[in-house]
Image 1 (cartoon, rainbow, N blue to C red):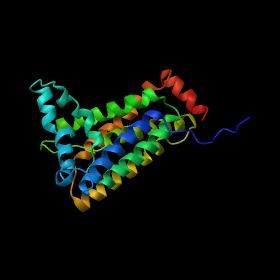
Image 2 (image 1 turned 135 degrees about the vertical axis):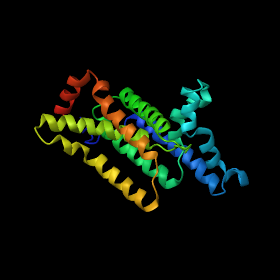
Image 3 (image 1 turned 90 degrees about the horizontal axis):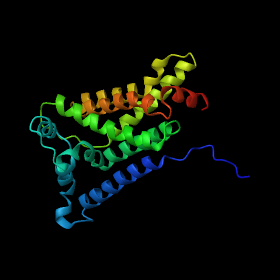
Image 4 (image 1 turned 90 degrees about the vertical axis):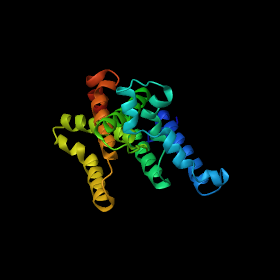
Length: 225
């Protein structure tokens, strides 16, 4: 009889998403370094931002002018695969993998996929209707923050059942927000935090609804962990 590993494998849907982000960043990074695309490759990252990033202008086209073209609608999701630099991509992928693994111990692949997609969409939507300037939004953070929201919801329920302070579940998001505030103070405010927190709220709200069997089943599964 084989010994079972004490570590649960990463959910396949999270692995696929992470690999797609890594692949895009590898192409853009190599092109920016001059190894792909020749002289034109240096501008591929900027071109990718222009073609796939989200911006408030996109929300205006969809909701005010009724433009529903696929190349416009895809930007509500496609922006998560484009990053501004290797470091930007690496940190986002690490959060995605870590939070996907933790949330995947309770949620199935379909639920994780729904949380990632809807967190990205809601992050873009809230960003689009609240940010006045036509600033581009790109990077995996709203989707990754959605998984942080899912993880927080799971911990929140577990702490409640254990009779402990449920506010402790928000420690991780509190730390990340504090880090963003420090960066904003040092390098200037970046409105992308609006999309990040919107993704977090989306993941937090959806988790009890998407857990197999709903809220009651979520609590039962947490008890067995």
